[in-house]
Image 1: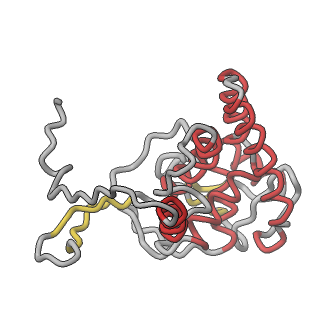
Image 2: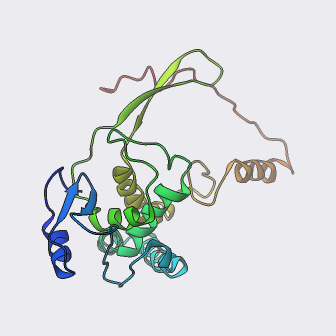
Image 3: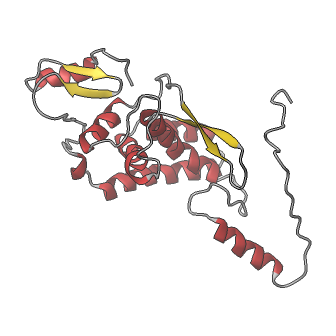
Length: 229
């Protein structure tokens, strides 16, 4: 991401190469100073978001994720970190992260503090080109939502679309490392698992003999924990 009203040198060079005077950068949106719609020129030569071969994109990302998983299993920390850096710099991984945030996610129409939402296909390619893990994230937009079954409200911070895309990119690199370390019977917030898998595991563990089951509810546990402790 780049600051508002500055000209990105790389984008400016690309604009001059094909006959445009300059590219004007506003936030993370890159618009040509004159002429038609935004056009991205990634290394693969793809010119339109709709032209992307998503099967090939996902295959490349999953190949790197499998290598990270295997390196984590054998305890090779250096290989894990090297492969994670490779994945996070991958153009395919950036495309997949942007697609998940702007198309697949239910919150794709939710804007952050910059008011940007509902990206057009050409804007998605532009976002892929300007994703930068070293960029300083923008403040989140604070909204208050009701707690289920109560009249209380809880705060919710909504990052910008660009920051959510960066989070999705980092998640692609971190998930395979920790999937290799998690307990086999852990089901919360894990890819490919749901509460139905947890129910099936409980059934299989209790169907042959009686066992003790602890059902605990701790009211406002995390609301009352002192951060200093």
